[in-house]
Length: 199
Image (spheres, rainbow, N blue to C red):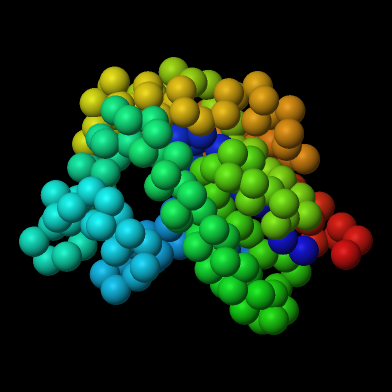
């Protein structure tokens, strides 16, 4: 079984995934895959360079993520172009990783993806888990964690699926607005449920 784990920016997806990992559940992060497919030598990075020039690359040939992020929030049509270049490649690479993990015999595997619903990756999973926190907490946690402006965080929040819609599409919710112990308790219950679910 493939379980999709999602949530808005700052909701704690990696922290929750690690809590599942401690219980023996393997996981793959779509953000890591998205970084893989724009590494030097990858076709997606070359497509970005051809469209936007060397300004999108650091001196060592690695993608300048900050410059690209700024560009796509200023020009929504460039975001659409970028997604058309990267989403199919991310999906293909995710499937390769998931197939490998499934062969390793875990009771289920996790696909951690911030854009699980928006990118259509929910079609790859059998069960969806949404990590839920209030929007003001998303904002404060992201500002504390990342070197980004409040304007940029609000733009990211606006680009993501609204909280209520995400909640409505979830098969299960994890409330991550309190302490780690509270989150781990929910992970333990959900893990027990998923292990006993019919395949």
